[in-house]
Length: 57
Image 1 (cartoon, rainbow, N blue to C red):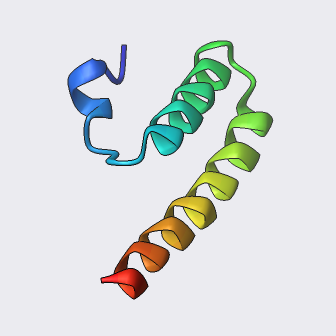
Image 2 (cartoon, rainbow, N blue to C red):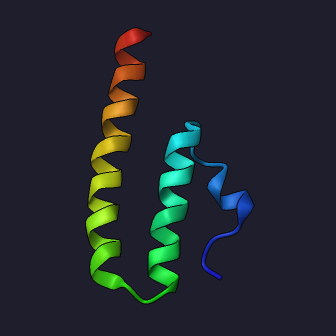
């Protein structure tokens, strides 16, 4: 397995963690096209959430 629970603790946002778990499920089921699309969406989402956090601080 590529990732375990310890590696997923990198994400502070629980929504990001759940979203990344969905990406891993797609990858492990060998649905690579969906994995790429979800990963791209995840990067944009995670970046947006981090920018919002930085703006509020």
